[in-house]
Image 1 (cartoon, rainbow, N blue to C red):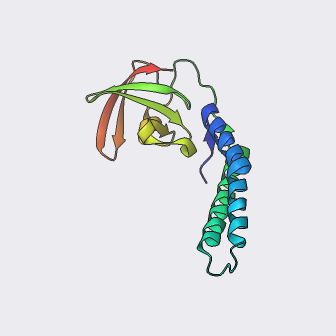
Image 2 (tube, rainbow, N blue to C red):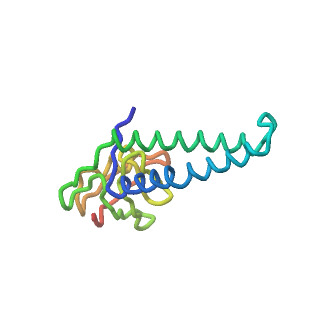
Image 3 (cartoon, rainbow, N blue to C red):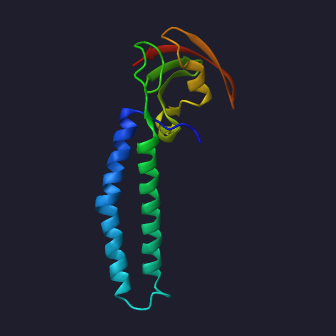
Length: 151
């Protein structure tokens, strides 16, 4: 299994989701199960089966989050001016500027500009500084970038 690396923001989001799942969602689904049981025959009660499936999903998600929080390691605060996990990076390409945040695989969301540390772009720029030029082999072909800024 791939190492679980969490940024401070990623850890905070997981902790908030865990609190919501335990304090709100589990209570809501327990109430839905109770209401469905009151309707009688459970073998043909769609509301009951749906609530039980939701309960199983929530329990699985709680277990997954607890595992990530207990087994994940916090991203090291990299050296100032060097691309590392947690860095917000602006890359200049022929298509213009592109903004990325380097995160652990569990936090990756390419549509939000959060790329996994194991992605081709992140691998290529890790350890580099502003002004460095890098070439990246991506599924779309080779791309060239210049690192414009690192936060």
